Amino acid sequence: MTLSIRNQLPGAVTAVQSGEAMATVKLRLGGGQHLMAAITLEAAEELGLAPGSPVRALVKSTEVSLATSRVEGLSIRNQLPGAVTGLVTGAVMATVRITVDGGELTAAITKDAVEELGLFVGSDVVALIKATEVALATE
Image 1 (spheres, rainbow, N blue to C red):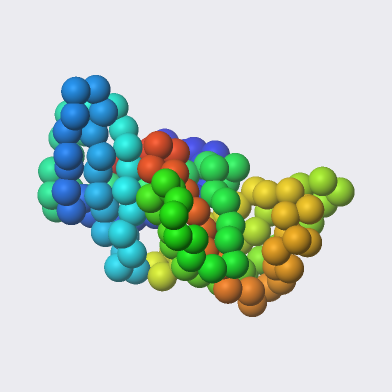
Image 2: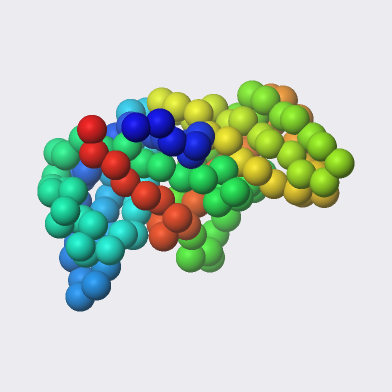
């Protein structure tokens, strides 16, 4: 299957916590970072997720926010440090390619945000991703 989702990070499940309707799934990505996904309980069961299961974390580029440093006091579970390796700015929007340990992410953000954050190729950034915006696929 080919997907339009650019952000596809390989990893392995380290823990699954099931609730009544949802499950949180903790992953260890290839570069050693940790990522959390919040998915439906039904999806977790259908995928057969358990510690050690190989998965691919999928995140749309429009669901990746950027900060210039780690952010405290925030409900967003996933904060992946990295560096800007590509930047394409249009009249209104921009795509920012970020290299993180073990992979790459793309963020689609506004041109104004790029300017206000002072982003350039080589900038250190932190990619922020809500757990509810991480989809999981099994290989």
